[in-house]
Length: 238
Image 1 (tube, one colour):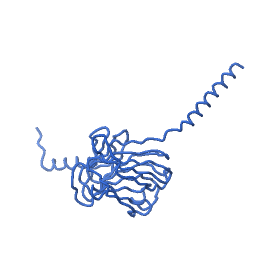
Image 2 (cartoon, helix red, strand yellow):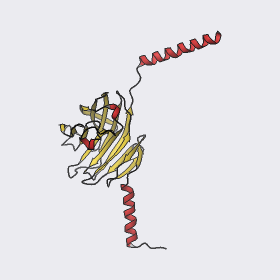
Image 3 (tube, rainbow, N blue to C red):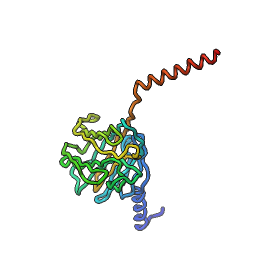
Image 4 (cartoon, rainbow, N blue to C red):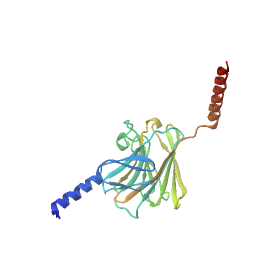
């Protein structure tokens, strides 16, 4: 039996660590997420959840591609594995664009950024245009489950609703506000990140609910189809 030297074992451990940190993709909640190579590890404990385990002083994150329309609702849950965290940690989320729009997030933010800090500090908001914090709330936001829901009410605004998990599968609305959107047509992905945080951050139950087609339009479409069928049958008789 071959016995590995201490050097070989160290190199093998380093290789495994590098694999965990490499950028790549993971799949959960019916979406493919692109992970960032920032010293973090990314796992998918269930088909509906992905976990970022970062490092102090590092900005780790993952993104999933989106194409949105006015009326769409994007929602997901965020949870942190345990109590007090050191440093100036943030769980941040914003919708991205390939266009160089403002100054927030290296110019890639197509919406205002939401920063979830801890139950006492609450939520902070940064403008996509100038990176400045413009609002905050100390609404209770528990570690073990917060539901974020974005409803795009126009091409340049979205209604954000934040709800706390009070029991498994049950959420109670805690806060709502309107956030700025550069242009919904410019959005190409959603990014959720973990800054200065060595705890495991879980993103789960991600969903996009598209605006339903108005019933009046469905009726008009049905009438057009019926009229087309009647016209076709008359031409066949002729």
